[in-house]
Image 1 (cartoon, helix red, strand yellow):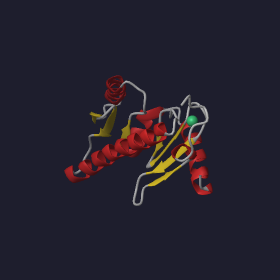
Image 2 (cartoon, rainbow, N blue to C red):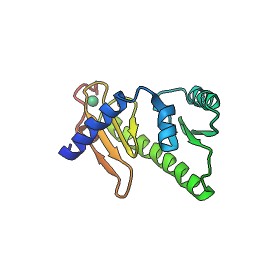
Image 3 (spheres, rainbow, N blue to C red):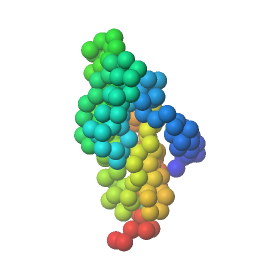
Length: 154
Ligand SMILES: [Zn+2]
């Protein structure tokens, strides 16, 4: 993994650990948030909506493949809302593709930690990492995309 990506991987991991307020805080900060991998999407949406109701904030949530997506319902012009949604859909497509590629090498990736356009994951067996950044160009790096998993039974 490139040193720069290594640094971003580390920062993403610690950023996540230092964000105990979780996805709702992220929603307020960024205006939109995707559910973390592995959570039950409808439960996640319910929890986001419950917190928003408490704060009298209007939110829109929707299913997004195996996950879910929430955004603040404020004066976002329709074309921008579409961009935000499309971005979230692209993200889940990208992460699904990377997970598939690492699985072909025998890795079992953890859930993804996402922060802004960056996402990280690691193999639960051997610790091989994936770092990706959505954008132009999209960056994909990490041992889990290149090296076979040493702990794989195959
Ligand atoms: Zn592995």
